Image 1: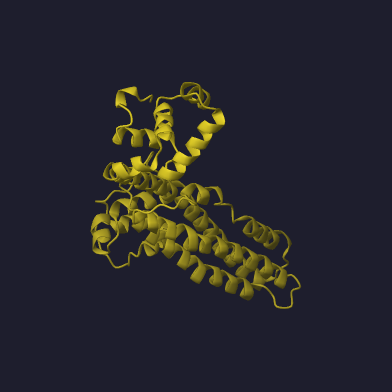
Image 2: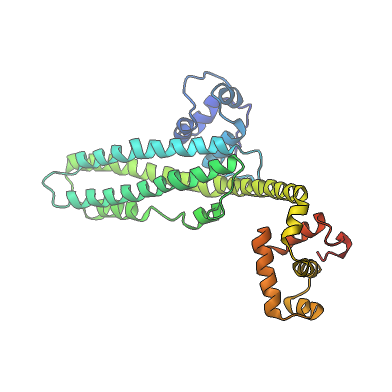
Length: 315
């Protein structure tokens, strides 16, 4: 397995693997780069070299860096995915439909049925990609700006990143097994099938790049944003100590002290001589007043507001 590197000539990469030509276009890399290296071409055309090589080596060899990789440029990946959508929706899908129209005899009763199957397939691809453009990509852009939504994450996308190939498999099978052809239409159908197979392979690679490179990169970005958010929240806690303390009753502060020491609701009730229902009511009020819902968050709050010494905290 050959892994291409930044100092390899770009022309050698294409010469060895012509199928990366589509990837070049999706990255916005124009032809006519002579004998320049991958890094030289990428730098001249404003493409992150590391991310380009990550995608290209995956497309060619199935190679993927293991574990979180903070060197990947998410904006570069976004540009690549958007351009890939534009290429497939704006060019490939209409191009293959035109090929099918030309290859299928107009007086064939099966012509409209085959075109209908293809149109159903095209709609499923359109819906899939438009969902990403309207929901996923704006979410990622918000992450890049340091914002995180509570009602969406990359796992939601990953769970619904389903298969879109079944209708295409059905179409190929029907044409190969059941569609009658003569010498002229057979050549056209064969050429069309060849293009369908090539684009099926391309679409599968596109989906794999989303699953194996893009999704892990966004998971890592989410972690970075969450860590920054925790830092901001701690800073805000420290800056608003007196205000936060004033919103709590003395009994609620007692409940917080017990919680961060690891006591259960029953143990808190026994220690404070109150009922378990009262403990739960205090906990709801604390969460509402502080907008903190985890024990870890309450522990941070208790430490920075001097409600408890860190040595008494149960970790």
